[in-house]
Image: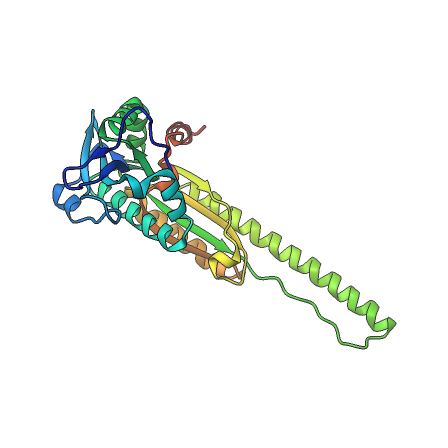
Length: 283
C-alpha cells in the first residue's frame, strides 16, 4: 500500500462529489482500447477506470474516495479477508485490462497518489527503467509449475510389546524413517531436475517459497513452487516439456502441475530488468 504524497490536497473527481485520490493499477506503453477500459469495473465506490498519459507511458487509474482509501481506513479494510479479496480482484481486473493491448508492469495493490499530477510525476521519474522492463516483458508470459512429493508415513507398534519386540519395533521405526528421508531426498532431486530442465525453455525463472499443505489443500508437501517467463513463440514447446516431465515424475510418486499463461507478476518488478537482462546474456 503506497503512502500518499503530502504536497497536494485530495482532488474532487468530475463524477464524484467527495474528495478523491488516484488509484493506479499498471503501467504500459500500449494503452488499452477505450471499449475495454469502459466495461471494466474497478474498486467499489470509485469512478470509471481511465487511461492517464505519462510521457511515453500510460497508467490505468481510477478516482477513488479519499475517505475509504485513506491509510487507516484502507488498512482496516484490508485486514478483513472479504475486503482483501474484493480489493485484490478489482486490482487484478484493472491489470488484466491494461495488459489487453501490450506488456504491463503491474503496480502493488492500492498504489495511491493524491492526484493525477503526482501519479504522472512518479511514473515519469522512473520512465527509463519502466520502458526497459516493458521491453523485456513484451510477447512473454508467466507460467507456474508446482511439484508435490510423496507424503510421510507414520510408524506404529502393537500395545504390550515385550523387550525383544520393543527392540524390533525401534529398528523398524529407524528403518522406516531412513527410507522416508531417502524417498524425500529423491523427490527433491527430481523437483530440482524439473526446474533445471524448464529453465532451458525460459528467458527467466524464479522460485517462490513452497506453500504449506494448509494453503495447497494437499496432504503431500510442495517441493517446488516456481515461475517461468517464456517467449510466446516457445509456449507450445514449454508446455510439451512440462507434460513429459510430469509423466516421468509420476512413475516415482511425484506430481508436476502447470498453470498459465499469466500476466508476468513475478517478473514485473523494476529490479527484474537487470536480472532478466543478465539471464538472457547467460550471466
